Image (cartoon, rainbow, N blue to C red; front, side):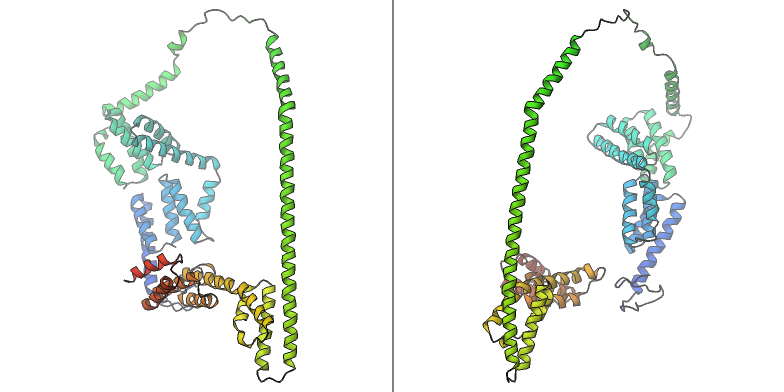
Length: 482
């Protein structure tokens, strides 16, 4: 058994997870109930009580959606009833929950290994939908024709058999009622407890007697049809040849007309079509060359701009380094603190240059701005801050949101405390990040700290009335009784 919180392996008899301390008694009870319903469904399926088995399996999955054995058996029952789409859906879900060692792989491969059979199933579904639409529209004859095809392609398709039987019954003819009774008898062998089938059989109880004239009439009709297919058709025999066929003398004019048409077509292509095609090709080539030239010029401009920015920043670094060396020769009592700040500023610059803006922002936050004596150092600090703080705030917000939703590196477990820690870091770098404020409120609401949650929702509404999160904050406050 796996722990529902940290997914660690735990013995079934354990009352508590050794890894995270989660209480497992209630979870173990639900898993046991799920297994009990699965075992009961298995016994029902063995005696062809498919409807009862489906009900039991759905209850099993309500207690434990990760019970892949129950999901696979449900797919097999759907497959037996001709519900191929429903069966594949269950097996795909089972594969999602258990990727390795899952029998659903075998079932899916068995269906996909035969493209013709898969296409046949696809056609039965389309024809059934067409028949259902025709029946609802009142075109019952068309519906019967389509359903006959469906039943011939997939005799186990219970819903198609039931709909065809219903349409037969609706006609009121005794021979059609006999056909409907025969369909329902065949279907009842697949699922012995299907309530719809049993209700139709009760309506057709007068067809049980095999000596019934209607049943015999259907058999006689089939036999006559077979005999008729072997006898000559008198309607065809009455047609005789009136005059013998006389072959006409060949004429050269059709050939001449064809050749003239071919010549005209070639001429039109040579003088009209080919020049137009060449013109389009040349125009397209010119457009592509012009676009390439524009893109190259833009790239050159970007490279030049980045080079100038790098040179400017390097000049500031050199100047700061020189100031640091001068300070190292002084006698100030705060020299160590000043030197540490300048070192941190240079480290932040190195992280910024390497593209790690989040790390640069963290290093920059440790700097005491007041100890930066020169205007160059302050301007340098401001430049890096503007370039990194916004990115760092966004990055910490995304991590906090993942921790709240149980996604990303926190997949499968929601950690509200970690989410609060990350979202507060996000606000340290950008106090106007209303997304972080909103999710902080959601975290405290989930932790049942309603006062703290209201504080963050109200902060969004009062301080940032134009934010997109205002409507959501108002909705959450209404939930909390504000």
